[in-house]
Image (cartoon, rainbow, N blue to C red):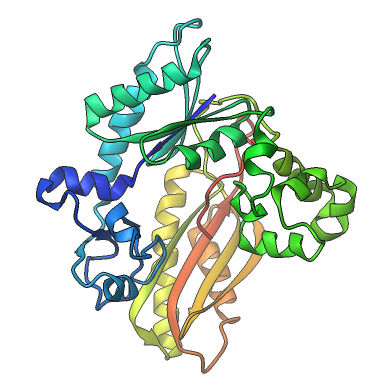
Length: 356
């Protein structure tokens, strides 16, 4: 199985539209105005060399690279480019089965399952096909599990190919910190460190039962599995079904008035309910995200009785609003609605990048 990851995807799409930007530091985020509150969506390699990364406040990125070209986010353009890439991946014939299986993970990445005796050659074939059809470069990771394929891609960037299997997993990853594993973020890495587990090799050698007191009977063994690079060996092209929908807004001026906050929550709820209505599934949970000035983020969640009534969802969202700390200016609000899942939807355990 292969993991295909488009290199500096959003920035690359912008450079295709504006060839004069090639080789220059390009930053994409918000409405392209560093004076406004927004974060970096992506940066070209030239901008990354100055320490600019995704999620960084746009104003800080602008300070780091004063001569950077800062552009607004254009989601439609990125979606169109992504769809072209995925179509190319699906069009590549497998050497044995006659077809490839493509599991889309996002705009810029996908797993590809194929039967072939020479995965490196097939990976290079994929790269050449994507470049020829879309003028976009991609890196390809090859693995005997989805996890290993995903991690392998980081060693292939940019525009390279790398293979990680059970045979070389610990040789390549053993001495690296656990945070470099797909599915282990900085918080989990710190919790592992309190147990004396700092490297991938130490996590691989850990007794799964020893992780249960800290992480629970399901997640403890799962983290031990990640340390070994084990996991799913199946690329699943079943259409992904979202568990929920979320919307959030960063305010250019902090909200300090209760009425302002109420209006903002109502607006978010209306937008989320539009997304939920398109799914046709009842809501069973809500999460309110609040970022207080200057930059402290808290989330307040609750399960709710299954409902498709917009008025009921709004009322429950306003109930959550009561948890917002008084006299604390609010710079961001977000609302997420969790829905029931269809019985036949994909329920896999592959770690994925998620929002909040």
